[in-house]
Amino acid sequence: MAAGPGPWLLALALALWPAGGFSWVKTIASGPTVGKISESVWLTCDISGVAITDSNYAWDWVRQTPGKELQHIVMQYPFTRLQHIASSFQTRVNSSADPSRNQLWLQLLSPAAADTATYFCSMRDLEKGTVLETQAGPGQNWKEGL
Image (cartoon, rainbow, N blue to C red):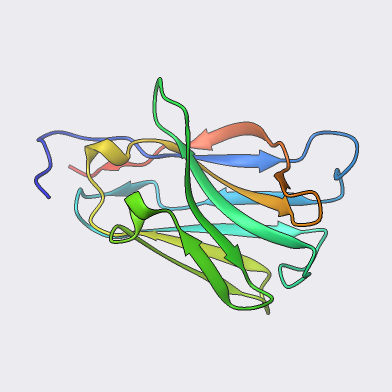
């Protein structure tokens, strides 16, 4: 995949649950601040308030590129060690979970300028079948190093 010249930006957002229903759950997405195009990038999601192995929930990585709709990347089921990666990302990402740390990871393989986005991890209530809404807090910027 050819990448255009110049820096690109990868914003990582803090995703906090709004007040109410699931305010006891907090997800925090984080990752590197400087890197190079085509070098793998690891994103981490630290979760508190519920175990990632709770069979009532699945976990999603989604992203929003500037001026576009949200894109679903992967849904993880750590309690079964299964996952579903969206077809457009199957050769472009890896994902994993560590129940002992209550963390999820997303690896972007050979990212390009088109991967400039705000990335979120979120919780899916399997009983209701819906993704719970998140609020984005201040993000971290990632750009190509000089």
